Length: 237
Ligand SMILES: Nc1ncnc2c1ncn2[C@@H]1O[C@H](COP(=O)(O)OP(=O)(O)O)[C@@H](O)[C@H]1O
Ligand SMILES: [Mg+2]
Image (cartoon, rainbow, N blue to C red; front, side):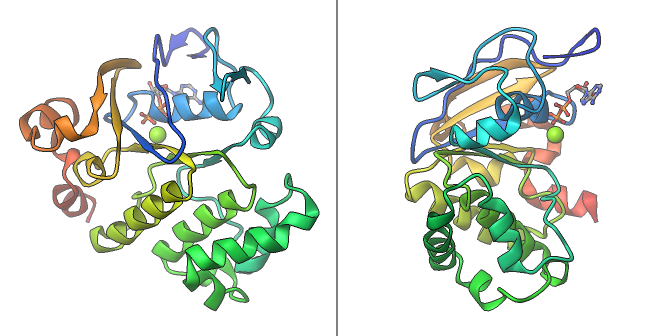
């Protein structure tokens, strides 16, 4: 992936399995968002391939990638603040078959009951954690096979992030494959099957997530204190 002449991501290879979480970690500027944007069809890669269940989707426009079963939940959530929770969910269903929308929304409410309670509330009035849940729900409304999550912990208190991790686990448990980007690595390792560490646009390490769980010194080398949620929240105030 290039931005002009800058090679932002080079030679990165990763895979996501149905029902499992692959975690991508790395400091600011490592190329995490660029990688997700390439997969989601928002930025055309210079070379390389993206396949979904064996079918190449490389270079397809973002709305087609959604139809191919891959949905991005971008950094900062980007929910529609003036619209209600239910309206946001319906927006997420725009690529799905109309007759499936009611069923999708029922399933989303089952997974995240708070969204049902808040269905008539303008999304802008939800708490940060609820807005992140709504962003997940809106992604689910497209009935994806795979979901890409860009820094879901961004701007949330550590206590809320525990709930968010629980939500991500629930989505994976329905069989959806999840590719999740985080700086806040330590908290996510228990959820992930595989982990990829990006540094300066390249893979610095990849392997089983479990193997890194107690490797604090190793994580600190690549991520500094941002690998640990308490330090991160203190620093971010
Ligand atoms: N729109 C853009 N134009 C030019 N350079 C960009 C753009 N977006 C990101 N970059 C650069 O690409 C590199 C990777 O950025 P990014 O993928 O956003 O990293 P991360 O998500 O890991 O913080 C950085 O050097 C960043 O400055
Ligand atoms: Mg980013």
